[in-house]
Image 1 (cartoon, rainbow, N blue to C red):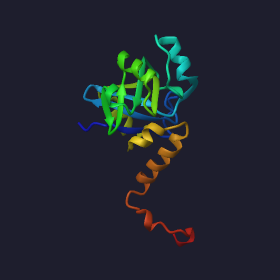
Image 2: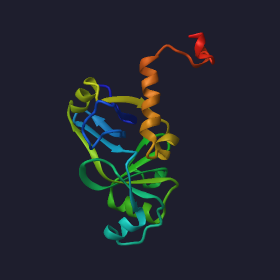
Image 3: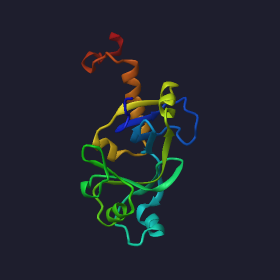
Length: 183
């Protein structure tokens, strides 16, 4: 089995589920038991500091907005650049944390940037592979910088790039004519 961990999962236009329409997910974990991903492009209008006041025992110094990681309920999950508070390195220099002590520490000592998620997307064994095979999702590699800078428009950027690679796998950028009439 080939793991999709550390890759983007881009919703195709035919994906009708409103939980995932026009989303880009990051696959945090994928193995024979299933997969866990976080939606990157669904920020809320709730500042992290305000949301943390409702659940944390100490104030938060994190900037930014809480993100909806997916439809499954779960604890706060963070993507960040602090190796000391990271439980799993998901890309070079990017870490995933879910344990209370690490999340609390990161709220008080935020790395820059830190992305805070509530909820996640989960798949049982074989489910994600079937959804990809059916054309609901496209896989794409991602760099550490792009992952931590993903915003609401990330689906448009990522899906356009993925479609070009699928539609024109052998077309090299230097071969594209600048004058469309030359096609």
